[in-house]
Length: 154
Image (cartoon, rainbow, N blue to C red; front, side):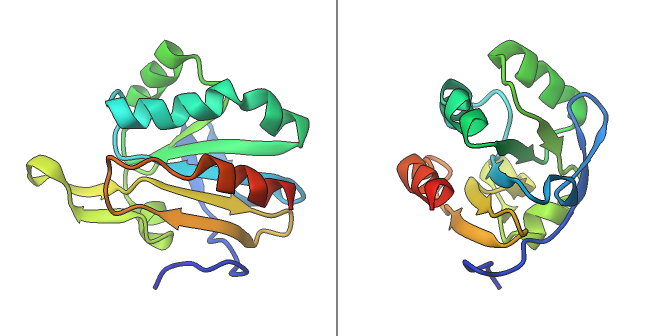
């Protein structure tokens, strides 16, 4: 069942690209934007995260935390973060538990790859509740950035 606005966001602990453990609970009292993306170093995923990078001052200005999550290893994500100069953590959901909890997991993706994160965006409010949820079926589509920003301003 997919998450709805008002639902409690599933907590998680994942390793970041700098090999530190990051939990959603650590950001209680702060808005959090979670971007799930299928694969590092691919065109649309890079475009998705670069949009967040390029608007980072807006998110910082409203005290919101940006997180990127994919099933890539922390080592791949570290290189992706370095190459693209992302200012926010990239988290490895290598075991696919978080993508599944957020209903953002392709059972089968391109080239027969199984268990790849769907492109998705969630805004979590200061109390840990879902304020915005968008899970895209077509990996070529981008999240609605204006709708994400509107949810953050609410």
